[in-house]
Structures are given as structure tokens and as C-alpha cells.
Length: 175
Picture 1 (cartoon, rainbow, N blue to C red):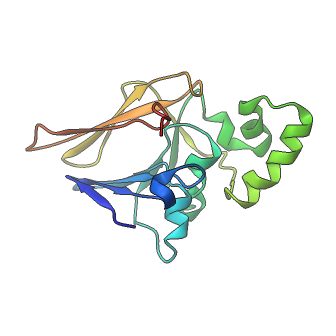
Picture 2: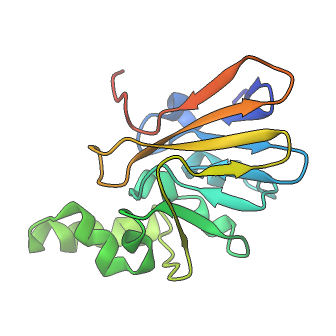
């Protein structure tokens, strides 16, 4: 797969252009810090050492957006406060979906094995309009609930450019 460089950010494409379950991720680098947004199975499939980051940001708490998070056990994970409980335990994660018991029981093994669920009770909350200043590069949180209660987009801007990048998460699910 060929990555796409966009200023201080790189789109890390998953298989089949990131179609479910693979996903695309965004690696953003500033002068002081770097982050990865939604580490997906695409990051896992690369093998080797994942892109180095100081923190992980999640647009929302769904299996395909957290599937590569286990590659970053030693850095802080950040979720919108409304989705934060979903990463703190498997039961809370499954509760986000509200599945009837028989579907919950069938999906749990996939969440754990295929999507590498790892509970992180120490994950941190962010809110609408919070800004992660990476050093000359800023990642602004835009709370866009609907897909999940805590779904967010991220607006990235950087010094010396009028360009911007908007990471949509799952706002547009069209083919």
C-alpha cells in the first residue's frame, strides 16, 4: 500500500482502501509530539514497528477504529468523554452497541481476537473544541455525535500554511 503524505500528516491506508474491517489511520507529526488517529487493522497488517507516537486519538469507540491500539500500550489513549467508558472494559465496549444477548455473545470473540480489544481504564477524556498542540501543528476536536454519542472529527492545521485537513472518522460511510 502507498501512504499519502498531506503536510504534517500521513494517511496510512488499510487493505482495500480501508474498507471495513481494515480501516485507514492518520499519523500526525509536530515539532514536539506525534499522534496516530484511529490505529486500525491496516497498522497491524504492516507488521514490524508501528509509527512512533506520543499519544493515540480516537474518533470514536468502535472495533475497527481501535484494532491497532494494542500496539501502543505505553502511551496515553484519548476518547471523547461520551465514548470513554467503552474502552475501559469489554462489557462497557459491548454495551455501546446494545446488542441482544445472542448477538453480543457471537460478536465478543471477534472484538477480542480479530480487533485486538484491550481495556484501558486509564484512558483520558477530551471534549469538543479541545486542542492537541503538537508543536506547530494543532489537532482540534469537533464533536459530531450520531454514529456514536462521542463521535468526533479532527481538524488539523499547521504553522506556515493555510491548508487544513479534516479527519472525518465514520461521518461518510459511502463507497
